[in-house]
Length: 163
Length: 309
Image (cartoon, rainbow over all chains, first blue to last red; front, side, top):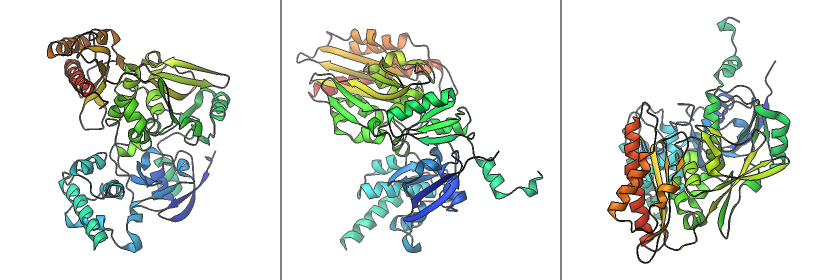
């Protein structure tokens, strides 16, 4: 017996996308395997590591802790949506600058979490940065360079806004 | 079928963690209750899903029908009416964190929320979900029993209020019936002006499950004497524990070090915590004593400032 498929339509990075999936398919699997947006990474698949973080209606959430069918009609931003016109955002460029990644597995989640922070707070304190990425595991950097990247991005965004 | 004949969709089927189920979005409490009655014991309600989805991924939960509560507007209200703050079961935890009425009238709940998961999980997680999941180390259930909250349980033909104290039966086991939906939580507001509260916790990483947690809320009069107190301990027993008898020992006392130490000692004395890979029973009992004392000192200081912290 074949499993019932649900039609799911959502706004992904400003583009209306549709696909069919069983109810039990998680949002991260739908993004990667049905929509072929493989920027979002699958890590622990039970809500611990944060690698699958995306924005759902502008708020960071874990896409392994939602079924795709629940996102029907909602707005999703993935890491692909951070680089407008294929050009790295100030935040992404800052990650390169401060060596805020090594293997890169956690990076999409780290970028989404820190992007959400900077959208809400243009000049976050170090404690606020650490709180914002507190739900994301990184096994390479020891976190310090990621914190520096977010600080640098905040500074650059501020300079960009005033120049 | 030999492995090399498998299609991409075969692999996708295998990659899915949960068992197959049917999904329905309810628009009202009436519809939720009707669906629960219709589908029987194999139906599950999903709100934020931050506990249920991992349970389903590990196949510890295997519902045949999943009823989504996220569009039920009547379960997403926050209202302060006189003696109570009423919170819809599906309000996002992040909204409770930001809502001024919670910070002003239920400071202990606001303090506890800082320890609940991470930003990404609080953006989806709900107080109702946390209560029905009934993890003995969870923060929101601890605040609910400590402040003597009441839970509104709605079924197709009935609704009732249950004391939080009576709701938790064992780890992950509550008194909710199969045909009931937790729709609202009401927290009594202490009317006094000199109220202070504090939530304390030790976990391996901030946002992880508590090894042990403790909270306290006190009223201190102008002479420095305690007139009302509540104490609770989480993660040190099968259910979150409110300790009204121990808290009563504070009434009429000035909360000096001697009293704080004696009451913290009494609070920890009756505990029978479990040992696990993270902490021994003895360490959890020690944490409970230290954290109750810290919560009392912090709550006393907040009350002494004459406003809610």
